[in-house]
Image (cartoon, rainbow, N blue to C red; front, side, top):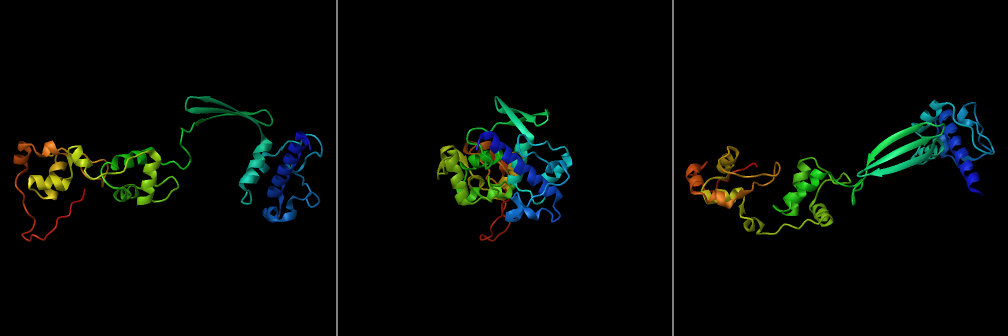
Length: 264
């Protein structure tokens, strides 16, 4: 079969689907029956979508409402819509400029439509996570292990590329894919940083009071996001002026077994 004959056969089959979706009395369920596409069981109706020539180019679809109804019909599948597009769309011209793709769509009948879409970067797919999530995991990988990292994006409502929740194994796989090193014990000390609990011990204060001092701006500290650990420079804690300004520790209870809850 020649290429023109194959194209004509495909177009006639698509017009047949349009007619079945818009004119069938059973709501389009005939498409699911084996004989729905058979030539001997198909009878074209009075609509323009059902009229085609047996030879040569098919007659154009004059009634646009039939095409729209076929596109949004509950029985229409992705395959059906692809075949409809092949009928109504004549040519697509693409031109790449930087990170954008300019498309010019030539429709049957002479109309044109211009579209501009953003070009995917290398390694970026529809399963990619948001850039904010990448930076969150990259920053937290220097502060805590994978098991602790998984809770931060979950609480922030950030999902994986496949809309799943984060777990230790998914964080580990994400790090390996993006070349992020695993957390090591002793990283804080190498950078000259201490946690809130360590700062409280150095200042002889309760963690809750150190947190109040941080929020008051007395103790310089940084927190990447809500729920992440506070990062305090050791040199700031060892400052004698800061130690005098912080004051002595006031225990909340005389019971030495009493523990203090610190909400970061």
